[in-house]
Length: 350
Ligand code: 5AD
Image (cartoon, rainbow, N blue to C red; front, top):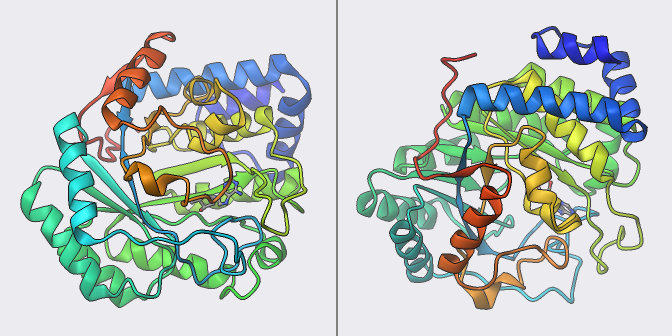
């Protein structure tokens, strides 16, 4: 296994069989996992030093037309409480976030049919006109190429669209009523053509997913070379068909994060909220596997519980300001600090 880690760390590609063998070893052998993580951390430090970029997450809407088997916002979940932020509410989140030092806002939401291009263009233009120096990241699911282009022209810079599963059958089983993996990837390609910095990624440990599937996910990431990669554990939400399934494995998640770092040294990789929800040290363990971004929540406190893609989402308390201080102290325990710069993708060091 040592050779496989060294190959990865020196920029060599691993095939599906080797990646699967490495992932399997990491799930059972703590020494292999540690070696992999040490290499990923070294690579991340060469790229980013000890700074961790922050992104202020604003959850626009909990309405969703999709019916993903794992997600608490799925349209079949009649018990989900739905809300939709107004333009004024979003602007208030941005104001608070900007004053705290955030220079990236992530506008995330379910696929809410009422979010027309016109409404989003106006919202994005408004944010752009008030805050010319921030990055605007969108995470609003599948839209038309024309829509992606309009939102980019309005001032958006980045788009997160996890591919969720690189394997067609697994993708189909998790996303009934979706337009399928090929359509998902066509959206990723449209986003690239529109010149967004693009994020891909997947959950670890969702029902039906094998180690080989995770290897396929990592190979897809290698093929598409996205600027951002989000990887977190699956967490069961009781009001979904997968509510009785176990959560994803911590070590396997950390291994996947570390491999993503070695495959794409300059990618922006968050220590996901799902990782922090799985285990209290999750966010730090993610950073100690090569992650270099965290995404604190800037949504109004009264809607946060309603944006339940899974349950008991980790956060640093209700006030964003308190949260940032808590994050800084948390990072300090492992020798890191918040980097308040905008944190665009930059592959000069690759
Ligand atoms: N557990 C973990 N992650 C989830 N996501 C959605 N539902 C869950 C869940 N139950 C992830 C998906 C989605 C991202 C916003 O959150 O990968 O792309």
